[in-house]
Image (cartoon, rainbow, N blue to C red):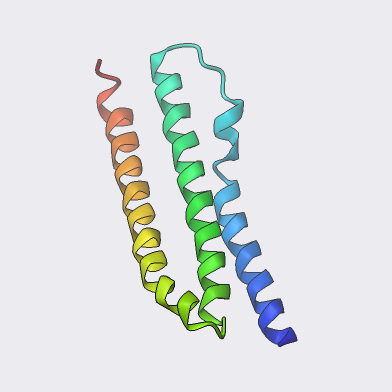
Length: 105
């Protein structure tokens, strides 16, 4: 049981360190529309990644739960995890496109 707790803590730390590199998005100066859009994309990506990582931590613990009702929810949690990953991909795509083409209103 102790090994499982240590493994869960290591997974959680790895997921959080993966997300931290987006933190400077909140410290950017918003001088014009392009930097505002860039900071907005980075902030949204940070939020989505944090939600996805927290959901992943919940799924890791839920898959080890002895309750069958909790196991029934793991499939829905995985679907939500994949949906959050897809939203992150879409945000990354639009962020890169706005960097290349510039901001269009």
